[in-house]
Amino acid sequence: MHIRSASVTDLEPILLLDPLVKRDPSRPDFIRRSLLTAHSFVAISKNRIVAYGVLDYSFFNQAYISMLYVEPSLRRRGIGSALMAAIEATCKEQKVFTSTNESNKAMQALLSQLNYKRSGIIENLDEGNPELIYFKELVKRT
Image (tube, rainbow, N blue to C red; front, side):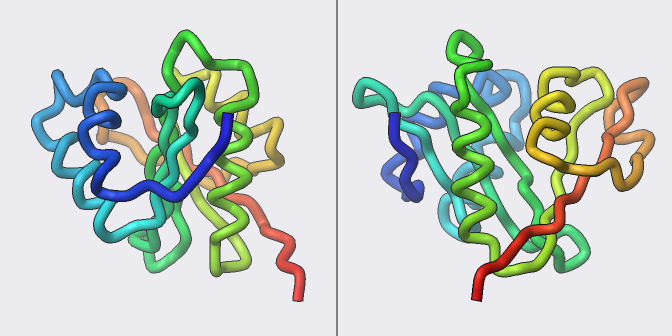
């Protein structure tokens, strides 16, 4: 497996990878926009995209990992951790934020393992499933 920056040529494979594309009409636009304007990454295994992640600076002008998605059959194999590390390495800020739903225990465990700290909660985005905000202080080498 290797990780590289994503490009617009990765749009179709990412759309096929992400099941929310079928349920959320705004998801394809989010992915397309991310490929054009954000720091997007893909994980490649056996010549196909198996995961993607997006870093942007739209969260109160802070670094924000707005997406991390790993193919379900390949989760818990280090792909998410590797993508997060690649994203963190390109981050130009001293800290980075991300979030996940309260119901997403796997992502919460990953964030804990990667030394992210709880930073807050946003109610009313997904009914009955609050969004948990996390942040991490990044060690920048000069």
